[in-house]
Length: 165
Image (cartoon, rainbow, N blue to C red; front, side, top):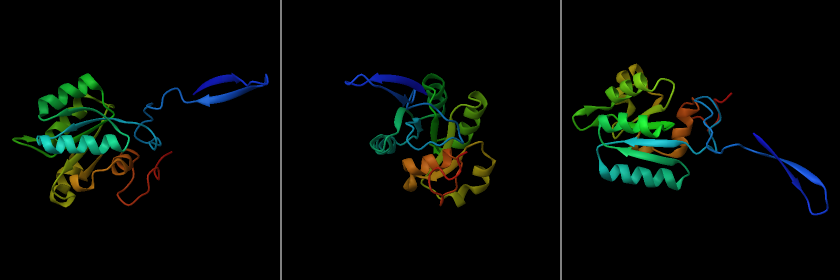
């Protein structure tokens, strides 16, 4: 928090508190409402990448990059340092679960990985539970609110910020 003192026209001074950065990462359990996360989207479907980027940016998230392969995901995560990486479970011949594991190994304590798929969570429940990912979203349910709920540590039906400290 940065304090700024303003002098009014009549000579009085007023203290204003201004956040040092509106993009400050508050961690996986901080209140994320209003924070513009940096997001990397990993999917082998170019149309989905563009559509998801447009949707998330219109709703206030910063999409810092797109990747279509595991190698691109690892490289762009290292280069761009996103707060969140959305990873499709099926990347052509590659596994999004493997990408999530590799990201967790290389980026300890860094980006929160959220697995995404056109399939339902029930189809991959065991693999999702075993993965280091913060959560899962079906592509149909992809939204800023759903992402923030996972990052805040909430469950699907919880309101945003319900599990913050």
